[in-house]
Image (cartoon, rainbow, N blue to C red; front, side, top):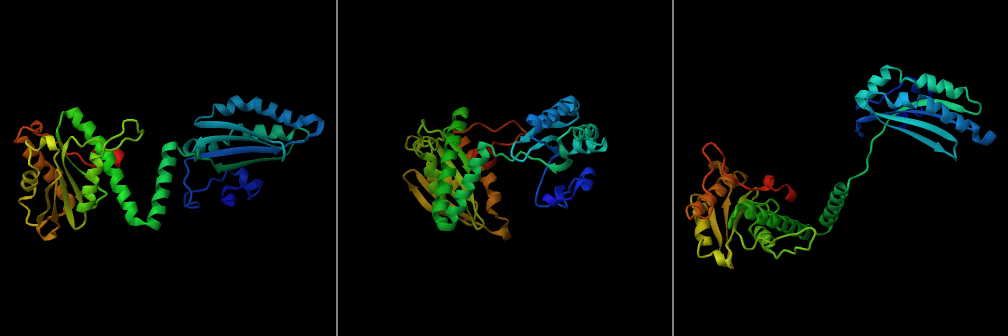
Length: 336
């Protein structure tokens, strides 16, 4: 990379302002470029050459600062290697325009440095200059990815359960908030992590219903008072879990609700009768009949909402021409 950017190419190459292309550096992306002016100074006469170099910089600093597209102008002084550097950073487009203008006032500034007694090694160089500091959010994500990879390498099953619970817990908070805004007692949605597995989907619903700690900075669960029908699509089947809280069971029978939604599908099977407020079913994929699990989520959620509407438990249909509300992954970006 050092050679590509010109450091090892010598003054003649550098003076041409060579800028590496994407083809030259397919392994590095960049959006900003910088022009560096540098020299070496001497400690003679109490660092007089360093002071003179600073004076020469002051004489052109206003002009450099006013170059269109300048992001920053930085000065570096190294007391160990006696280097004095000025680095001007611009966007790639602005850099091209400045390059066509011969990086003015580069020639004048470098010539003035060469005139200073004790100053040697006057050069210029072009390179990319990017801010690669990660934000706190990016750091958290990176740690999550590292943790995921570590877990997968040791116990992928345990890691899968953790992901299911995390997604379910976050979705529970989101369901609680959305239901409160709409004054809803029942809610229909889907989750991704169970991948159509009924047991994992039930585990996800338990996480949605877990008691929520209001003092927790990353609150989870808290939607146990809200009835819900939750879907998860896998390659081979769609899993459905229904939960009806005890105080709502006179309004809705979970088994009846589930049967009303899946009844028209020949590949549908009730796998769990109402037990502790929960029941579950699966619908097997059948490409020959155009039954693709991921495509079933939206029509089934609408069917579930219609069941509730008929009992006055869900808002009436939206005005003609508008889509019914369907909540899922895209509506809850925090759970992605």
